[in-house]
Image 1: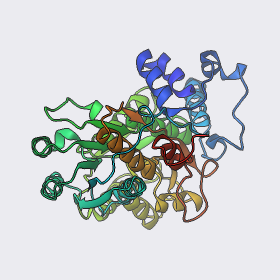
Image 2: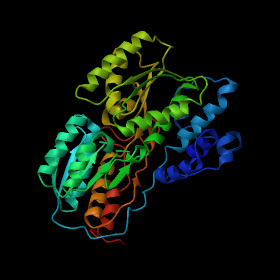
Image 3: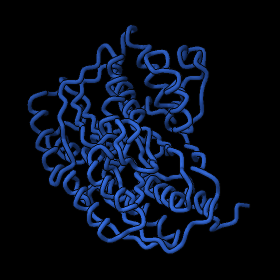
Image 4: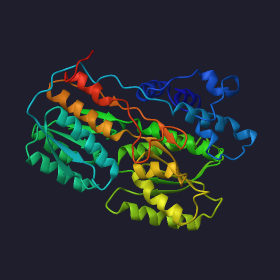
Length: 405
């Protein structure tokens, strides 16, 4: 996978690269090819975003950086591979009641994860109860307490890091209730005394790197960015860190503003107001990229850019690929790229981990792969999310619900 082979020469440790190759499941290319593009086949203009990003002509001093950015994008638009199973095939234990702790049903990303987890648990024959965490740590704690009071046999929490709710995790442990998490990025934080027993994640930091490289390719190595972050959610924090790792290598790129936008109720309207104010501060030519850590943040930004009449000069890069963002990309609006997060798949994978835990297994950490989506690559039909591999059949075979043949 070219991204990590390239990044090795810039900053990344070899062990990280090896792990991330496994997590993304994309095709690797030789290091010599990545660093000397003239000696390799150039990216096909019809398949690479480089042909449609409107990148400015670059000086010779910037060309190597832009070449690396375009190579990264080109190698991150291909099909992803299924991860290895989290353990041996098994027979799920019957008759269990599982609680789902939603990060907050106001956020479309949380809804998609809940839907995926619900689908998987129902296929397993489990009773499902859901509590809405309402996008705040206090809401997460209240929802967790309700699930514990309902005497569930296990809890799947979605994007609520362990270290944001240590007391709730202790309460679940004291009640003997195992907790599995999707998109919590707990491995990126210091462990707590009563951690989740199994995790399924995206490589959030690599998703951030993808946003950084795309911004460089989009602007010809002259990205002037407004960055919206969320330090509360570990996956979103890691995306910001990954993006800054890449942008720090770009001499003519500059982060103009960093704004903290937590996903509390009403965050879309707040984001719209923040972007409107920043666009008034930075006229045309002073800013050219808005980077959001999630499409739930970018929706307000899209509206603000359109209302300000800045669609031609300010582009948005983000992660998750929600329907509104995909539609904006399709219509050549402000958002030009999203780094796909297969959220329904992640929720479904969490149901697999829960079933394994209840069957006595100790599952491994699972990473679900991601890919770049733009106007030329991986863009689904209107009203549809980015297509995933047939993960339902993949897991059902491991549960003995369909023939492995």
